Amino acid sequence: MNKDIIMKNIRNNIKYLRWYSFWSCFILFYPIKVLFFAEICGNLVEAMSLFAVQNLSITLLEVPTGCLSDKWGRKWVCCGGAATMLVSFILYAVAHNYFILIAASILNGLSTALASGNNGALLYDSLAQINKKDDYHKEVSKNMSLEQLSLAIGSLLGMVFVFISLRAVMLASIVPAVIAFMITLKLAEPKKIYEDNSTNILHIFNSLK
Image (tube, rainbow, N blue to C red; front, side, top):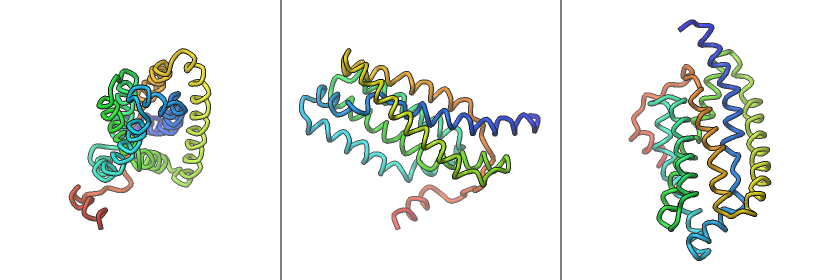
């Protein structure tokens, strides 16, 4: 592929990651999530336990998924995170019992674990390849600002759908997740600035230490 085309694709990563930051956090169900869980489960104890399941899955999967970024590539791990988020949202929306909600919560945790570290590395490597790595913190700040703006807008919009039903809010949240996933498919794989040749077992051992 022509070098100019490659560099153009890498520069586009910066724009795509901004849009991904926005749409991946455009989650309408945040304000009513526990209410929806309680409606399905029948009690608040089981509803709150789902948050614990999600956070525990993030903790347990953080190290194993962290190894994948160097092995599979930044883009495809980003795609995997967006895909698992989308599947988890679909499961939330169609859930009719506690066990489906558990599966959705685990997948949601997996999505967070896949994005953690990898998406920052994707942004850094992309900037480094176009000789703009000094702009990393500025770009991170822009992305974080878009995430907060998206959360605010999504939450307000969710209050409109809540007049229909709680499940309507969950269903509406699938649309931004689809957009976020489609954006990740347009990303280009940058050159890795740091290549990790250690084994997954060594990663886990060092993390445990």
